[in-house]
Image (cartoon, rainbow, N blue to C red; front, side, top):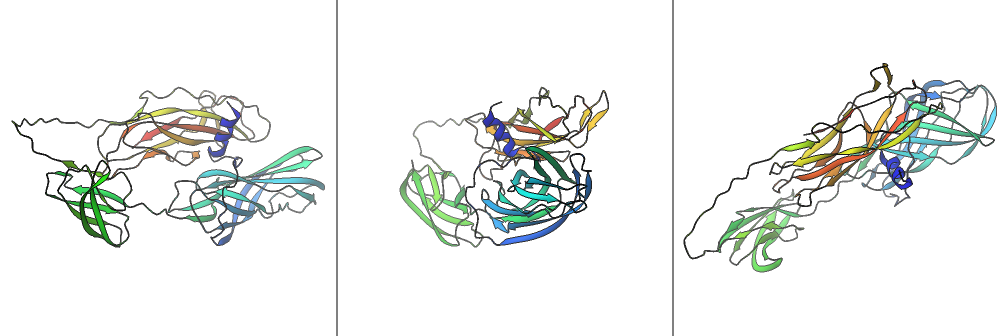
Length: 430
């Protein structure tokens, strides 16, 4: 696997302890900052001879209260005092990494190294971690939560690094803060023609959406050029527009002025001399199918050697095929669920292991009338997770052929039975 592909997987797959890749593409400075303190119960695995510990830790998080999808915004996380009580005195250089779920997408904020003098009996209290997070695409109009997935402190002692890993219970935590994502303004569109065919002299009502309230005009077109036939109408406060135009010349489309393409097609009917011979054809709907029917071959994520630390391995899910031959305007969703990590022969299991996916969805038939949208990266569980979708078309034809898959990552606990484990990830369509 190439380094570039591995980084792409690490950037989005699963509820895992990941590195935030890529640079800052623009900080949002207009939204007001909001600060919230949340008590989170954590279990901490500390390097020997420091004993492990658990208890509540107060996380104070400062976030902008609003942003746009795709924005990179500032975040400050003050972890508060740790439940770990040091048993010895030492001075180390510590780096704190906070793994978060931002609207379900895994991201990590890494603090600047700080010199820490540890005092026996005094709880560890790391300093604030300041960085950035990216607002996931596709979250327009939603309020997204920022949750704690894990916090790792790397202590450098004379060139040797000792890591303390604290995991919230439950994992991920409750929301440490939230951000309202702005809804994108929608382009004005022409949605329907009634009727959508006719002879010269036909009066056509064009309807549309997302128009400013007030008067509107509409036009007939032939090969993209206005024919001179125009009409008038109005749009109400909701943006719904109605406009009437009488078609007197040959036209192949009608639009409400200000619409974005594609405009609505109009079939101009012309009388032809001779004997008329009507021809009928019936088109029957096909299936909505997810394949292959008999399932996919097993995906190997390789092997891992136990070293006392949480480890991650990456792989790629085999692409499933989606065929939508229904011949309508319906949409679909593909979701993923999984079974626990088990070896049914030995009875061993890994309850703390997680598997995540960075979904992908591509059109495989260029004649497909629809596109598809990949879901947000996140952890797969027994609750269905949306990994791909095709939006309903309203008055437009939908359907096509697609491939759904994605990069995957498994996060393993620090200790488990040495064995071969399997989880079955099931993709479903509805």
